[in-house]
Amino acid sequence: MNYLEPITLVDKFATRTPNEIAKTRGGSKLYRAALKLFRAGDEKADWPKAFSMMSEAASLGETLAIEGLACLFDYGVGTREDRREAFRLHKIAAEAGLPNAQFNLAMCYMDGTGTRKNRPHGVSLLRVLANAGTPPEAMHELAYALRYGCGVKRNLKSGFKWESAAASQGLVDAMYSVGVCLSRGEGVRQDKRAALEWFLKAAQKGHGEACFNVAYYYENGIGTDRNLTSAKKWYQRAVKHGDKDAAAALLRLGKPPKVAA
Image 1 (cartoon, rainbow, N blue to C red):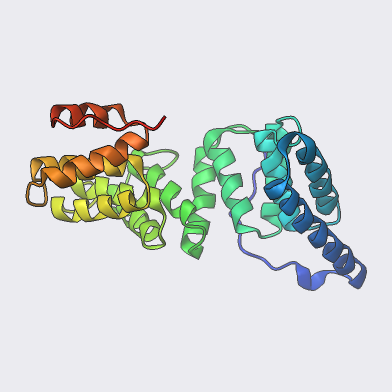
Image 2: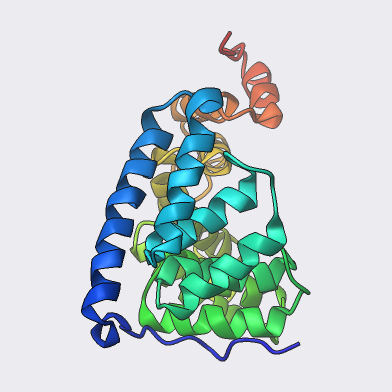
């Protein structure tokens, strides 16, 4: 099978004719209208109509609509689920230079979604995006591949580097992963205090596993002074994310967990 070469961010709009530009403007209006309907409309009544509008916008050459249509096929929203068609559309939008589409295309190759799995190629696409600095999800997924040897030789130091880069852009999953690396000494010198700081950053943004780790560190005085009040607080937040171990920890500490009705 022929695969795309690593994608560069190319602006193809400069070569369009006035008629093509006018069509794209019409597609842009339809795309925005479809998005508005998806966000505000009733699922059963309005999503098929919004899907139809997104399809028309895509046919007029609106790149965002092409990628939007791919995502709708991915999840079967307003239409039947069709991963092969989603892959085809991700590829078109990626070739047009849309970073989110390039990331989604890379993940299709990593996971074998809509196409044959080809992790080495997926990694090459992720690396191009990571080096370009966007989206941070590409850095995080590249870091994961490097940390666990998925489609590339395992390299813990490089994995930590890319997790840190994604975390610096505010990606919550990467913040948690940086904490994990620091707690284990994975690709970096072990530092429990710094690990707690990163777990706390992720927990404050609603990451459930990070909430549990923060609580555990406070309960056991890891990287900080022991603080059972803070431990109970963060275990309770982990419970809200469905963590059964956090509920057991609260019972062990004599504080029955509050479970939302």
